[in-house]
Amino acid sequence: MLLEFTKMHGLGNDFMVVDLISQRATFDKMTIQRLADRHFGVGFDQLLIVEAPDFPNVDFKYRIFNADGSEVEQCGNGVRCFARFVHERQLTNKTRFKVQTCSGIVEPELGPNGWVRVNMGYPKFLPQEIPFLAETAEALYDIDLADDQKLTIDVVNMGNPHAVTIVSDVLTADVTTIGPQIESHTRFPQRVNAGFMQIMDEKHARLRVFERGVGETMACGTGACAAAISGMRRGLLANSVEIELAGGKLQIEWQEGDVVWMTGPTATVYEGRLDLRYFQA
Image (cartoon, rainbow, N blue to C red; front, side, top):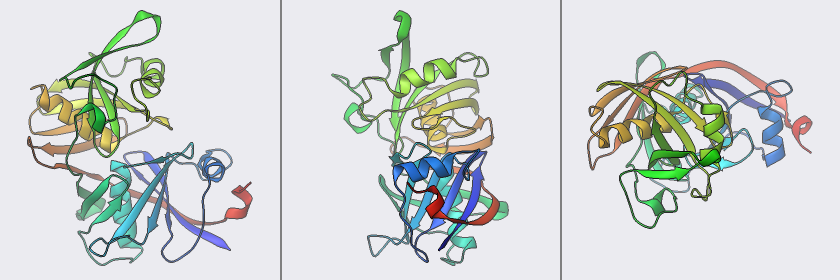
């Protein structure tokens, strides 16, 4: 049986999207890794799966798997692509709907020209909510890196965990060396996404993200949310800010005590079919 899928991206953060409402398939860790291979498979940062929801007041269930086969709680660029996918596949005629994720309910809203606005829910800051090992909650934390280096970070959970550090120049930041150290740091028991943010002015910042289980990506939606919130909490950014990533720009809005809103584009690259047996062990 051939499996239908769609290749999509949000600002270059790319996905293989599969509808498991109208068709059936199972994906183990090795199969996902083979599918994610950019030379021998479809190639993607994350696999997005559409399923029927577990609750009556929710429209869809949304599961996300990294290229290494690990399942994660949330993906900001992914949920925008997910929203466009279910509408284009005529799985719903709604332009705003509720989606169940491992970290809670999100509400995407379709706009013109492939843009999607998403209620990303409430950010979390307490160490146990990240999770992050710390004796007390602080505004900022210092962590130890290799060669006796120390790094100052903020920690934010936007459905998945993020560590945000501010750099003077995002283009020259040593993301490839420091990113893996933060991702697998012992103080993050479930690993973490590492964000490197350069403040341009109060309404504009640049960002690079080293994602757990993937590496550096062209864009990270939850990472943009976490970075924006970190900058807002430090008094460096306004409540509505443009976050510029390698793949493009996202608009993030947040007021203290409220939900986070993310707005950005999506794109469908192609639709395809494959025999899943060739990727299974």
